[in-house]
Image (cartoon, rainbow, N blue to C red; front, side, top):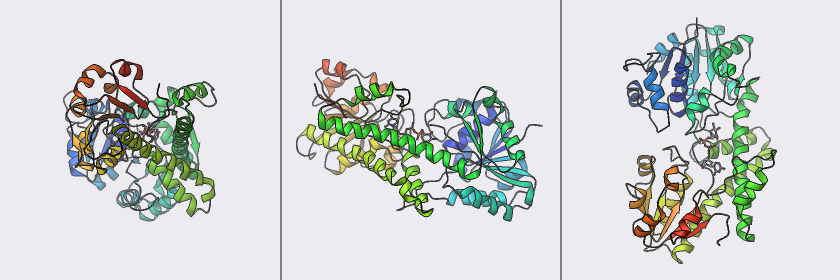
Length: 446
Ligand code: UDX
C-alpha cells in the first residue's frame, strides 16, 4: 500500500507540498497550529497568492465538489502521528530578531510535538532550511521523545521551490536531494518521488550535513550571481557601460549562463537574504567563518542597490524629496507573488517616504501585505492612479502588467514624465517615444 503522508506547517512550502503530494496520488493530512489557516485551506483557499495552487487544492481537498478527497487538514498532533507513514516538516525558519542566525524555534517545536505522539513506525522528513548540523541534533531528540523508539527515523529533504513557480517546481523538481541514514528511508522517499524521478528528475542521496548544505549553498550561489551583476552595474554606472548588454554578452558563455544576471535593485524575499546571513552565522559557530566572509560583501552590494535607487529618485526630483510625489510600481519582492518580506521595492518606497516624499504604491497582488508592513505609505487601486500627479515614477517589481502599460496614457496622468526602471525590464525606447525621460540601473542615458 502507498505510504500515507502528513505535511506539518502549511505556509508556502507546506501548502504546496501537501497539494502536490495529493496530486501525485497519496493520501495527505496537512497540519498547522494556525486555526484560521486550517479553516481556509479546508475550503480550498490558499493562504497566499501563488499561481496554480488554489486550483490544485480544489482538485484534492476533501469535501469540495469534484475533488479527489485525498487531502485534508487538522490541528491535532495525535491524529497526524496516527495517520502518517511519512511526516514532512515544512515549517518556517526566519531570521532571529536582531541576529544573523536562523530562528529554529518553529522547527524544534514542531519536531517535539510530533515526536511525542509517534506511537507507530514512521519516517520524519525535514524540509525546512536549517543550519548544518540540525538534522543530527533533531534525530537524537526524536529518538529520545518518540514512544515508538527505533521505529521512527529522520531524513532531510531540502526544498528548492521558487515563489511564483511553487507548484511546477514541486511537481517537476530539477533535482531531489535526500539526506538519509538507512536504505529503508531511501526506499520510502524513492516511492514518494517515483513520478518526478520517472520523468527525469535526478535523485541524489547524501548524508545529513550535505543535504542541509545543498540548500544554503544553492541560495548563496544565486545571491552571489545577482550581486555580481549588480556590482558590474556599479562599475557600468561609473564608466558609462551598459550592464544589460554586458550580462547578455557574458551569459552566452555556457559556463556562466544567462539566468540570474538581471541587474536592478537586488534580491529580497523570505529566503535569499536570511539564508546567506544564517549561513554566515553557522560558519562562525563552526570556526569556518573565513570561508563565507565573501557573503557579507554579497549582502552589502545588494543593500547598496536599494540606496542607489533612492539616490536616483532624489536626483530626478531635484535635491530633496520634500513636497514631491513619487509613484512606485511594485511592492512584492518579485513578480507573481504577494510576498513583501524583505522586499527591495517596499524598502525603497519606505526610505523615500521617510525622507519626506508623498509615496503612492501600486502592486497587482501585494497591496494587502504591503499595507500591513507599511501602513503610512499611500496605496492606489491601479498603476494609472498611482502615477497621477507624480514627479517621478519608479518601476521596482517587474510584473508583466507593467510591461503592458501605455506610456502615453500614463504620461497624460503623471505630473512629470520621468521613469526610473529599477528592474531593467521595461522597453525604454517605447517610453522615450512617448516623451518620458527614462533612467535604468547600470545603463547609460542616451
Ligand atoms: C529562492 C530560490 O530561487 C529557491 O530555489 C529557494 O527554494 C528559495 O529562494 P525565491 O525566494 O522564490 O526563491 O526567489 P528567486 O526567484 O530566487 O528571486 C529572489 C530575488 O532575487 C527576488 O527579489 C528577485 O527579484 C531577485 N533577482 C532574481 C534579481 O534581482 N535578479 C535576478 O537575475 C534574479
